[in-house]
Image 1: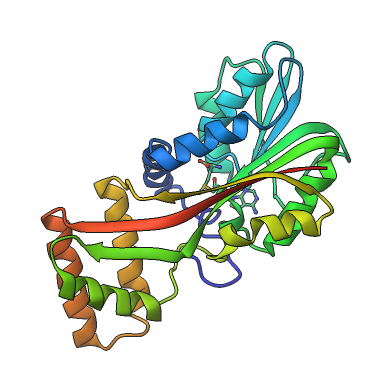
Image 2: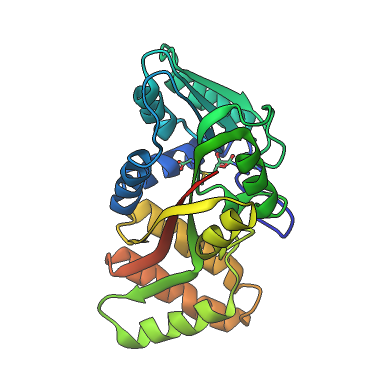
Length: 270
Ligand SMILES: C[S@@+](CC[C@H](N)C(=O)[O-])C[C@H]1O[C@@H](n2cnc3c(N)ncnc32)[C@H](O)[C@@H]1O
């Protein structure tokens, strides 16, 4: 997963896509994600007839909401670098006339200059192959003057892992966490740099929001825990790793493992 210079999400194999889709579906039910999406939608300044672009649209969950926003007569265009994900979004949105989904790269959007009214880009910059700046520059290029670019992302460097009923285990995990670089993101701190990236492209910040993702479903906690373990194997000795693995497994089994990550959204105008 996610070596430097690669995109973990983009490289999901056909065999893994079902698991990735299930994981995105669970994430879409998390409080901070739902409330942040609503908050963004309220600030896009678009209505019926408008054109909105969702960069890195994944399963198309939010794209469907955006299609509702611009209906009737508008266009909600989704774009994702992963053709398998594009297939999923197309299937799920079949029959939604305002929605269409393209295979494409965030850092080289297949659209002309100033052709859309608003762009959203949620939890994509952490995965992009090149610099997140390249993708933000493209979002700024395709939006019309006065249009909105809304970017949302996590700051995985803020990840807190704790065992609710065991202080000693918590401090062990915190110490391990501080030593490892998580494998499922190439730009793990991008969430807290969103405003800088947007102003760097000449956009004006309209509003910003910070939330905490902490209601991870057990399957998602397991995923993060597996990621932490895989990364820990690079910095811990074999016996240390076995101890950490045992600790995580035991905490998971009794439902005591908690994780929390900071989550940012920034809305900017061109
Ligand atoms: C964590 S998912 C988020 C999906 C969706 N925006 C959501 O919030 O549910 C990241 C998505 O970005 C896509 N992606 C990763 N790198 C990309 C790139 N360079 N250009 C376009 N899409 C990309 C992945 O294929 C994946 O579907």
